[in-house]
Image (cartoon, rainbow, N blue to C red; front, top):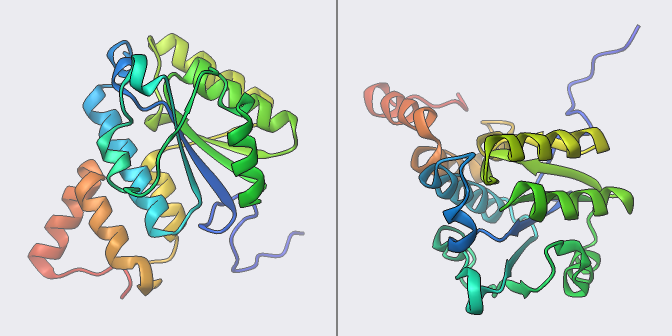
Amino acid sequence: MPIAKAQPGSTLLNGNDHTLIMIDHQSQMSFATKSIDATVLRNNAALVSKAAAEFKVPTILTTVAAESFSGPIYDEIQSVFPDQKPIDRTTMNTWEDQRIADRVNAIGKGRIVLAGLWTSVCIVGPALSALDQGFEVYVITDASGDITEEAHERAVQRMVQAGARPITSLQYLLELQRDWARGETYDETVKTAIQNGGAYGLGLIYAKSMFNASEGH
């Protein structure tokens, strides 16, 4: 019989074990994205960015043809990392850009978390490539999108079949926190959840305003 231990599972993420890559969250890519509402997408991109910054996750920002075609990366992302200039590519597959490979190797994490536009091209490419090279890959599916729901879902299905693990934006934030008694990040996690956590954030506002609730006891 297995023995229960009060410790996290090995596939749960923490701030020290992965690199986050935010790919092509740009205006031109967003115009044709129909699998998710643009406002929701921008909100989720902000939530992921804030979570990564709070937990000091090494983060790579990358764009494609930012100045000649696709426009700048979302301000919701850039404002969280004001000193980081996104790596601007010509390759549709981020993983085929040597600068990305060099940055991933310099960071030295065996897990890669991906989010971006479009799921079937800009996320499938690096996901399958990283998996093929022995990395573990997680995909934040609601901070990604595609031209149709079908395109997005088939892309996610393809990556899952290859071994990628799908997660959501709020799940990413709360998985990094994981214990409400973790006081050094509690306030910022709650702040991010209130600002970008949708109905969950509303619940936090209510609980803290009405009876000063605290999950950490």
